[in-house]
Length: 235
Image (cartoon, rainbow, N blue to C red):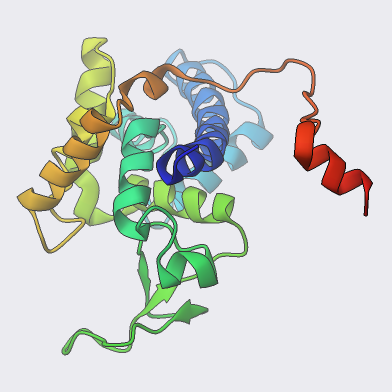
């Protein structure tokens, strides 16, 4: 199995799990919003949940009117999944297929910066940008979750959210290839960065994973065989 295959096999389930968590919140938020728009009674618990979503996804500041339709649209434009093919392509590009110093030392798969908290200082910081570091995470899953939240909340990626919402409204499939075209601000390379992502998606045939999901089937135990099994049993 090649380094690329190992990288995708390792990271793929984490991406799908992260999307599951987002989809769970989106489904509940959608249900509450539909009830509000229908004039139905909404429990205090559901109202609290929606307000927490508004705060967590930086939808609005201060006191908000939960019956405001424009607020609903903003919520649903942010609380949404990210095509797995795009996530895998960006992780490969940003972490050198998981081999970069930041990925190895801090599970930093997407090269996200931080000016607060824990992080790894680059060997050569860019002048004029402050004392920034590369954000670190306890697990790779936390890195994926943080990256998706960044795409869903940061002002720099509003084009991605707008394009995704547009595709949802039209009933069109949301693909990593399509959304990659909106990420000119993720890297100082601009369009060249977008081209790299789309090449990664195409060359590695990542498009099918946009339709993948985690199954609830029985646990499969991977049992060593052959020489590997002999070495393990002889210890």
